[in-house]
Amino acid sequence: MKFVEEHLKFYHFKKNPHKWFLAFLASPIHFAEMHYKKRYHMQFAHARKLFIFDMILVISLITILGAGLFWKFYNPTVTDLVYITIEKTPTRILSGDRLDFSINYKNESEIKLIKPKLKVNLPIGYILEKTEPAEIFDKDSSTFSLPNLEHLAEGSVHIYGRIYATPHVENNISTSLSYKQEGKKKEETKTTPFFAVLRGSTLQTTIELTDKILPNSNIPINITLKNNGDIELKQINLNLNSLPKDVTLIKPETKTGKIIDNIWQIESLKAQENAVFQAYLNFNLKNNLDKLQVEFTPEITINNTQIKQETTKHEFTILHPNLTISSNWENNTTSLRPGENANLYFNIKNNGNIELKNLEYNFPINTNIIDTTKLKNTNQITLYNNIATIKENKNLKPGESTQIKITIPIKTYPSGDEDLTISPEIKVIAQVDNIENNYQISEQSPKINIGTNIFTTAEIRYYTKEGDQLGRGPLPPIVGEETKYWALIQIKNGTSRISDLHFSATLPSYVSWTGKSSVSTGNDLSFNSQNKQISWDLKNLSANTTAGIYFELSLTPDVSMLNINPIMLKNIAISAQDTFLDTTINKNMSTLDNSLEADTIGKQKGSTVQE
Image 1: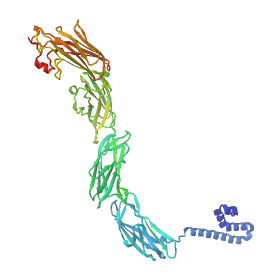
Image 2 (image 1 turned 120 degrees about the vertical axis):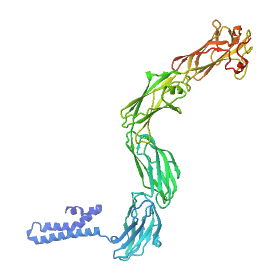
Image 3 (image 1 turned 90 degrees about the vertical axis):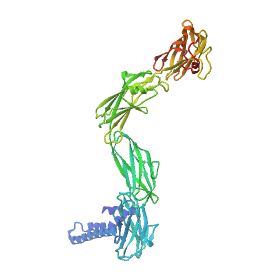
Image 4 (image 1 turned 60 degrees about the vertical axis):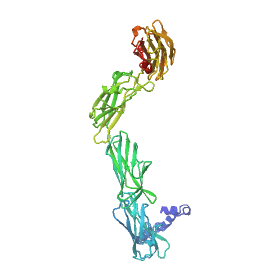
């Protein structure tokens, strides 16, 4: 044999002893083969000897094979003759139920077993209540110290308790019997596995959720935990942070336990009692999702370990309504002056695969810019909390379109920050069959600029509001005697800067310019004695600021003015350039007489000319 020739050498004895040993075992066959080749090969006179030689070789091979198999399968232990069986009660178990079991053992070997110990490996969630016989059980090691077992000796032990474990998962409750054969020192162990699968939990979780949702919506969720067991459960936790991506929990509340970091914690729950949790699920999902599953798994703390209970799952079907909205101002309007209005159109099309019903349109209103009274009068809307609503009660099937027109009137005097703009938003609300939440979508309209306006007041006074005397001379005025009054002009700019502000007014022939005047900003007034015109110019006036013009006028009435209020100032005009819209503002004011309408003190003394 080539293998023997190559490896039965001193070199392989040192380097590869395992190959050398195998070659040594096969060497008798090799030497017999060599002996055969030298003396008997091709020599037929020795046929009888050759037959005997072949038989010896066959017997040798069988002997070597038999010895190898014997050593391979020989078991000096008696574990195969030691029997352990486990019987549980009841057969169907829930997490939180009682689990009592008996362990039966028997020695069917002919050898006496010395110092047998039966160890029970209990799950972490098993609460041990008692054992029988209790006097031979060590609780720390979960071991029964049994008496020596003679041939055919048998017995049983009993364990009573309650199990808490994750349902539908195998729980290994293995037992092992350790002993020594009489007369031997080596310890042997017989292990018997036992798997308990819990079919549910006494802590029942019930979820109340709708089956169909929209990708962007809020829905209520109610979770009820009920203790269906016969004893109190303690330290129950329900982690609510395991929601899918783009799903958040909002407004959680409960009357049982407390909620900390989205973990519902219940200190105790008595038998047959339940606890209720309420909140909302906010969905902000991608449009390519058709199904979504949420699941909730309560946990019970047993033996300082949190043990998951049965998981309750809920699958949503996600509907995908889709409205597209475009908008435009009539005549492509880009700006509006105070007091003007414009029509705004919204074109709405159902590009989804679901019919949308009872369409409603909401428009948030900028009440500082938009005239709400005119808005209600020019549109079929309801207005509440600055939200204009149009209820069309129309359905849109897939592929259908509709158009909404709303007239936007601007206030005469809009207010707010500098350089106002508006971009009215529309929110479309529609109902979808079998969906609790309405479908909603919003769209912003094109932005337009809003111009400024000038608010003016003009009055003739003899006394200030505080009662200080401004005028001079008799009051009421007397024919032939001079009475002096003050004209007070206030020019209040609106929401954009104005330039080239110009004020002008004309005095009647019988009213004189005294030369006394004052302005709050800019250059002083000028007076043209030929045409009796007063004028004043200001290069710029910032947004939301006021300029004041004040000047003294003299009146010496004649008999023709008896018992009347003579006109003191006429042809009052103001002009300016709106720098935001690049438009001109022109305002004309009514004539002013000496009736002192705003001067309560002076009016009481009299304003009509007397003799």
